[in-house]
Length: 421
Image 1 (cartoon, rainbow, N blue to C red):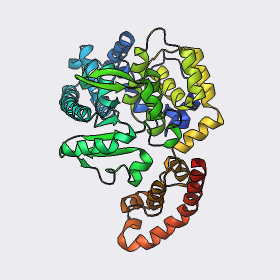
Image 2 (cartoon, rainbow, N blue to C red):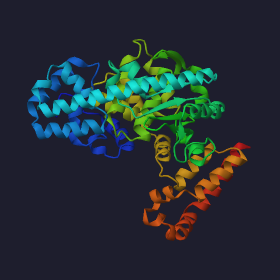
Image 3 (cartoon, rainbow, N blue to C red):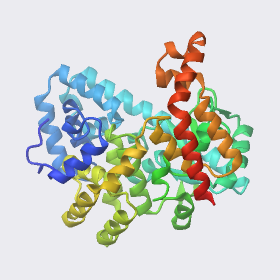
Image 4 (cartoon, rainbow, N blue to C red):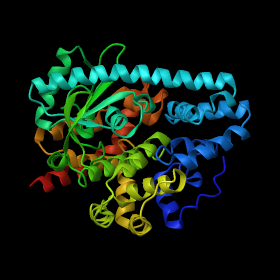
């Protein structure tokens, strides 16, 4: 679908998108997926509905099947169904395609209703233990920014708790029948230690991620540390449960970093989240102050990239002067360096240097050292391939791994120890 009436992003905006995306030529997304743009323009209905009407006249059944597949990949299928129904166009597209979109919508509705039940159960149980909870992404976004809870697919539940409460929160989940995901159950395990998250699930149920920091990559924790987030958090009610929720500025930073840095603009639904958040900001929102704080915190690159995409392709409206300031700041060397560190490959020298910043106590240093130098076979499989992770190949694989990681690990731990003193 062509949106020739939409002004193209500026060169600086495209540069910001390119720095975080795996496919910068198309602004982070391949060409076939551009037909989804209009379906993501929830609060910009008149123009979007006209785009959708034009789309229904142009696509044949094969193209609609391609659009369905892309919508599923990008978490957009329920939204496409809802927008087609809103425009009274379901009968204007091939019947099998309309039925498939309807099935996606209904399945998401069923899944999210189940998730609401789990949310009430878990938050209530944690509250009974005097454990404060902050809702992140998922259900909280669906409840606050979407017209219908079925429009925002989700596969897990993200909750933020204070680090001191993690052991009691884990015990509570265990009492509810949840069991740890492989290697992610103990807050003192290597992957949980470096990612600040534990993951639990029940059979045939969704997984729950308990975070004590907002980001798995430490470089952005300095810009938005959990301790500061708690002091600004808002008290809201989600499905009859009182929970904490991110301050709008913190939420915008968080969603932009999540979409642009952690997932490289790979799914359109994450950008719809951002666009709807911005559209919900109060009319007196101080964009100048927001821009100054964003630049000072060195998160201009992810914010600029995500907002550039939303403005160019989702018709989001934001002050041009604020955007241009963000685009300029996003091009700074320190912004690029932070982004590159956050996107470093697992157990690379850059990753080790970054992750060591979360290691402070002697016990943590020992866990970190063992986790880097003696990774699990599943990790070796990811790093070196399936053949290298076979039992007979393990001695050579570990030797190869030690040669690559020992020196940067010891150097990073020394640096972390010196900063700790």
